[in-house]
Length: 114
Length: 111
Image (cartoon, rainbow over all chains, first blue to last red; front, side, top):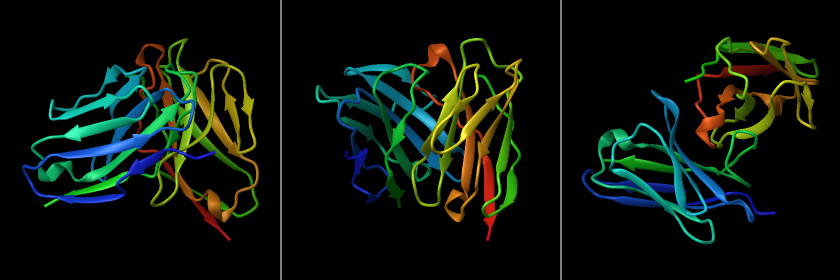
């Protein structure tokens, strides 16, 4: 079956712009989480959505937001981009929410802010 | 946040078993122990997870200490493809699907 699909794979944006990243989870998976990975901070949790509701949020400014649609697809948005937002953004999906489930990650969207 | 401690790096020979240790002395009774690995230029990959009992799957085995303050991921026969960063993570009961990644262990496999 198809894995977690993230689009686009690569993106270059200018400071001050906004960006929207997309994630299509594995069919039947209803939970989608987003992570940011940078060389300095490693992998950091952004937020989790389950059944179109945000269940958990990491320690990121309000410029980072997300949503989930009825088909479980999710988008994350970053407004007023800063140079420090350059990172690999990863999406992970699982069948349900909770700490007893393994999660499948996508290959990520590499965002470069110039 | 529940924390884990792992060695920064380990080295193994191809086709030999590998034991990757993880300490989690502050684990609570409802925290699950998860292991993920990340190969270069890829997203993390789920390896295994468990609560109290040892777990086995096609990729690896997870041995959990009786007091749950430490665990060991066992790769039975390392291959070059197993060279990756391995993350040991405590997933808290009230944290939904949030995973708190640490620095992980970089495993190098020598042919």
